[in-house]
Length: 126
Image 1 (cartoon, rainbow, N blue to C red):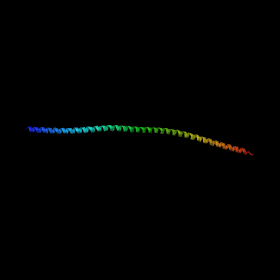
Image 2: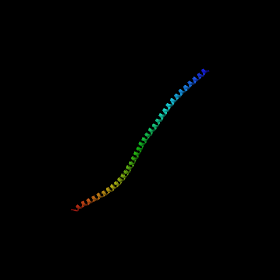
Image 3: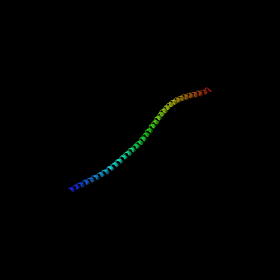
Image 4: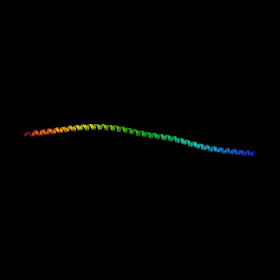
């Protein structure tokens, strides 16, 4: 019976040793998983920071483009207003030139009549 008890004790010790070995392997795996989780967490944190910086840079560029487009649109609006004013000035100038041309034609006609009258006076029978 003592021998049987010793065998049982030996088997219990072997089982305990195997359980300790399993626990050690579990601890090793748990340590590896913890390291992987820490590395993944670091990677995620760094990735989020990178994406945030990249998005901030992209937002800055987009805002700069929007600002430049807005300024260009404002310059175009101002230019178009200037062109409208120029067209109006040209229209008024052309109207004045037409009146001037009409007056010049009238003056030319008067001048022609004057020349005719002067030409006739010289030929008054002399």
